[in-house]
Image (cartoon, rainbow, N blue to C red; front, side, top):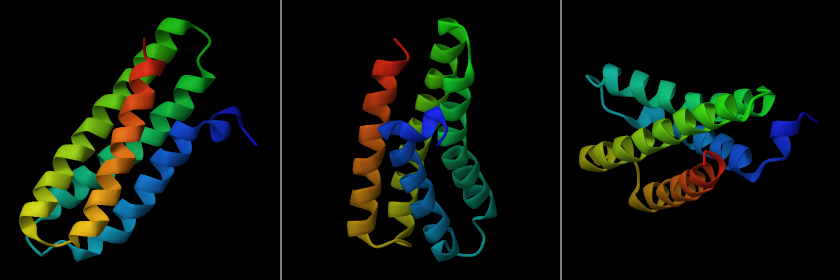
Length: 112
């Protein structure tokens, strides 16, 4: 097991990414840009967490955690857009948002 795999924030980010992958096919045609943006933002969160763990300086780690936090916030805004499209069931969106709230909270502490 690699060091980042032990982090709860990483596991939550991966769980959110799994939700995104499951939800992407539900979005209506004509929203390819949204699909691409959501996929890229959601993938960026765990990737930046893993990269942060591999950095040797605290400043580099904090920067990567801050980037991951920003991408998680973007995913939260995308969830709001997806809610407007009525493409994903509301209970699923609530669970996804709760996951992101946890991720953002943990990343906020890590990038201080």
